[in-house]
Amino acid sequence: MRFYRSFAAVLLAAFTLFHLWYIAAGVMNLAPDEAYYWEWSRRLDWSYYSKGPLVAWLIALTTRLGTDTEFFVRLPAVLLATGTATLLYILTARIFRSARAAFFAVVICASMPLFVAGSILMTIDAPLVFFWTLALYCLFAALEENGRGRVRWALLGLALGLGFLAKYTMLLFFLCCGVYGFFVPASRRCLKTAGPYLAVAVAFVLALPVLVWNWRHDWVSLLHVMERTGLTGGVPRFWAATAGEFLGAQLGITSPLLFWALGTAMVRAGRAGLRGNDASQLFLFAFSIPVLAFFLLWSFHARVEANWAACAYIAGTVACAGWWDQLMSKAQNVPAKLRLAGVFVLVLLPGLALSGVAHFPRTLDSLGIRLPLKLDPTSRLQGWRELGTAVGEILANEGKDFVLVSDTYQIASEAAFYVPGRPRVYSINLGRSMNQYDIWGGLEELKGRDFLFLTEDEEPATRSMAANCEEIQKLKAIDTFYRGQRGRSFSVFVCRRYAGPRP
Image (cartoon, rainbow, N blue to C red):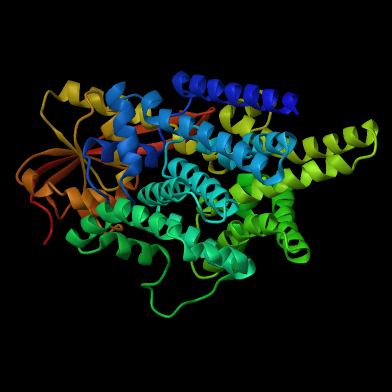
């Protein structure tokens, strides 16, 4: 078993070093959400329109210790991913008392496209998944100790609170606790101790900044969540198409064979737990299937993003690793073990291939495979540096102190990061959904001034802008190319004598 511990340590080190190299190489521009959260980090606050403040605080920490570069924006994602994989190893080893099962958990984790993407992209999922995993370990350890040990409960509260500051999905942890308590009545004995209440108290104190900020801003985050969930759209409607889209996306972010293995392991854990009265198996079931089921049911009502159910795959990975370890233990001889190992590799190969292509998409071109950009998820991470360079040249050549304005948070955030000097960029609301730029405001200060307006949707945006400017004139078209194909196209307009925001 020492072999598995050593090999897991080597795998974790290699995984971390590779991703440190990758984000330093600058292969991919910042994703729009990454640039958006970097913008948040320049204006630190207790919370923000759509999310809690933790992602901004982490980016602010690393960029202030380093510099405002892609490497330091993404550094927390790499470190948190390593921490998550390490916690997965520790949790799996504790549940199954097997270093081999723990090693399998790390291998599954490292081959899952969802986790691999979260290891380099600094979005809210990186801290959420880390603190969800930490909360799982603390809760399992506390329950094993029959509710004793206030340090475990305090650390659980810390994980819950910080996870909530990352993403409100952390609240589903309480749903999972309820499911576990229903199936394992003995676990409810801990409610007679002070531990659970200490955890809730710590979590509540950490959540206060978000609650106070929202109270001061008319609960805009709550309204945003209601809008995203479709709760503000009148009578609920149910669409099989959006549910199918969600399930299809799960096949993509985990890989088809691994999704089958994870789903089978989750269901198997519930069945084995009920039949054998195994609290450990029921623990894994309770913290995986309910999360996946929650988002699947939601997807019948509204569109659900693929990554929203990410936390389900933490316990699912542990259950799958334990299942594979049991299969290996039952193998009677070396040839049987080798055949099983071959099956495991076959299950993991599609995910590894998808992750490899995602890291180095030009490999498809070298193989003669011309993947359309609309099917290439990495195309969203290209073209932004070219936009910044082109806008910087315009500012230098025009010799005027132009302000930069866009109609979307994506363009505004990317321009703020990639235009030389990293200027302040404004986002005007021409009928889009509300975002953090609307909270910051500032457009009223531009009344009477000329500015550059950056957009992708040229015609509808300029029609709307015509009512805001005395004169609007197209200055330049910026076409970007990626993998030999035409990528994003931007237009730069001069808005002269801005009339101010509409009432």
